[in-house]
Image (cartoon, one colour):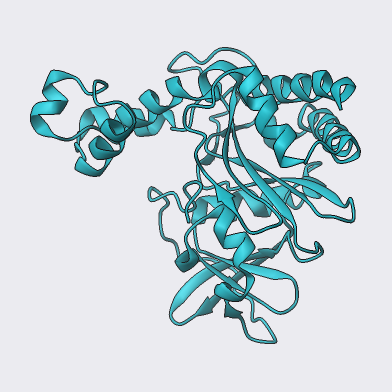
Length: 308
């Protein structure tokens, strides 16, 4: 089951990568299905026996994780341990964030006001490649959404699809969107494409925590702590953070965690440009709306706490 994109296809292959050897050897990810069900394709992941996760190699993500290991955000991202190879495939090696949880509930929220890089828009204009699969996804949600030209081609550009999809979800209204949830009973839900309003989001969150005020309060505190660190992070102010998610995890013991994951589209800014991550995006300013979305998320949790 796929909740969001894992590997940014624009990443460039380079051979000057640090290599590590894992011992004991990795085991197939299917033995730890909760993670796969939430964060992507089984083919992109392997797991180790030492609380490590192997994720198909992406140079963009590797560079980000290496920098983050020396940034204030280190406690809020998976630990990173270099690159290993298995069956002629390279993998980034990082902490399995679910390793210390017992039958966890998991939620993936994609952060920011857009999920595409400015570079992707530019490439789409220069080399347009209409896609039938994106068109089929669009008409499945709204048969009237494609333009007359797109209907004639039976295809849409990826960026057009992504921009259209964001107008349906809370990405456009709140600066984040819920991608998927896995509950303790094993049920998974990715049907949040039209979850747009604050009240709708609140109902989803209440169901996710089973109306448990203690767990909700723990998430609320963790997000406030994260916001303070983001505002001080050198990495954050100098990177365009697009397509990244917050991973929410809790279990029946009350243990709670929130981490930033997926940095395949997180790219450094040209010096001396820095972002505040709250300003509205206008093409060219590189703003991503990450903190705007986090502010709204925290405000929603704040308003929910007296109700539970």
